[in-house]
Image 1 (cartoon, rainbow, N blue to C red):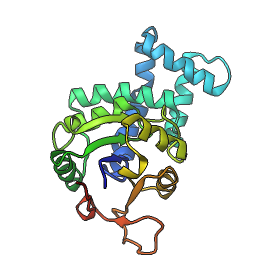
Image 2 (cartoon, rainbow, N blue to C red; image 1 turned 120 degrees about the vertical axis):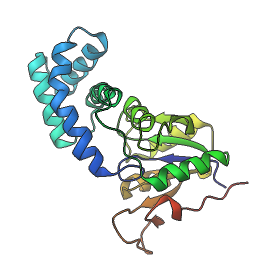
Image 3 (tube, rainbow, N blue to C red; image 1 turned 180 degrees about the vertical axis):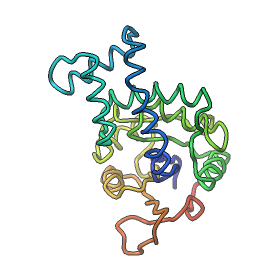
Amino acid sequence: MIHAIVTDIEGTTTSVRFVFDVLFPYARAHVGELVRSHAHDPAVRAQLAEVARAVGRELSDEEAIAELVRWIDEDRKVTPLKALQGMIWERGFRAGDFTGHVYEDAARRLREWHARGLRLYVYSSGSVQAQRLLFGHSDAGDLTPLFSGHFDTRTGGKREAASYRAIADAIGLPPAEVLFLSDIGEELDAAREAGMQTAWLVRDGTPDSAARHPQFTSFDAIRVDRP
């Protein structure tokens, strides 16, 4: 029986196009402004130190900005970039520059699962802050009360089985009682290796009955059995 569901965001609850067409360009356009105007903010300073550590040498603020822009262009899953993007997106969400895209079927089913007593969690390469902003300012309203917790790359890589074992430990359930939703086969492979059940979202394709994980075109097709 399933007692908890852990969901990815991009391609799963949310259109990849929203991330690449709205969020990433917004962060790219504002990262220089954030660094220059908040250069003495301890939170920003700490992340700039992490950028330098990742590069392996001291960086001026302008060099750090250039590195961050390059990482955005390359869609790098780097923790300090994700943290700074979260700070930028917070301003955008709060200013009403955009709302977080969530598929209608995902919002509806998440509400249904929560009402049935299933515990819901998010695991994304985007920072916990960014996750809460997207779901807190979504097209479907504030969805944050539905979630019992959030996980990001600080837990570990999304293609590493150890990350999913750590999530199961953190939520206090055997992995077999947890269902992981994603649109990436390698992430699902890692979750299954850890012992979780899996569901593969193929929103823009046709499900393949021979795929190594059960495939679904929407949350509506996913059946979750629980006591």
